[in-house]
Length: 253
Image 1 (cartoon, rainbow, N blue to C red):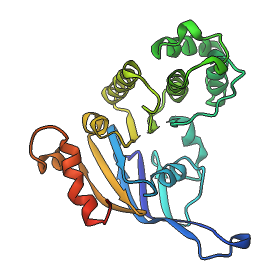
Image 2 (image 1 turned 90 degrees about the vertical axis):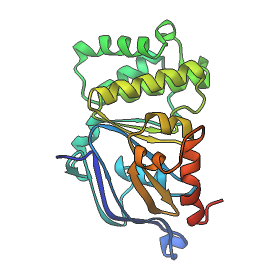
Image 3 (image 1 turned 90 degrees about the horizontal axis):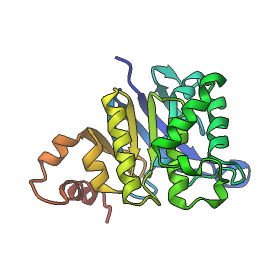
């Protein structure tokens, strides 16, 4: 079976000093991790754990210092796989003079979508995220929550096999969070893969099938959500309760 992503002893060290000749700052320390195809995989960890670095490597925005990564069954050198991935960031830097329609049309073109079907796809997505009535307005007039909704539409424009959500509910109101969760469930039902990076534990607990926990650039736990929660008893804040001994063991306050 082809996995969505496989990290094998991946190391990432950022250079320091003049001309990068310093000791370097380690961000990932021998990470081995498999993200299965289908379902929702959570990536948790405190700040500076290496989560963002891992996502950047997966998206070929950075290169590993050592180790290997396969993405949708192919090595990172096969850039064609990027057309099968969607990515939603917590802070978007969209050109603010573009309208929502223009932005999605642009990204659809970058993804290689056919021009004759792109217009209908754009209208469909804008309706899905609740922006159909604002589709012709410049993004400069959008609130942060509206920009987040547009970011979700942009991440879905190429009907991705793997959708990466990096703190996706930042700035979303209740209806926006409900929309996001509904979309994730739809993708899961369609046997697509979602990688969810989030600090919102109720969201992770509700949506994720399995997860990995990073601390200081190392994977300290992987497994199914059911197994992790099974050790935490019942009641509210089950995931928080389950994570507490793992973090305490690693010296995370």
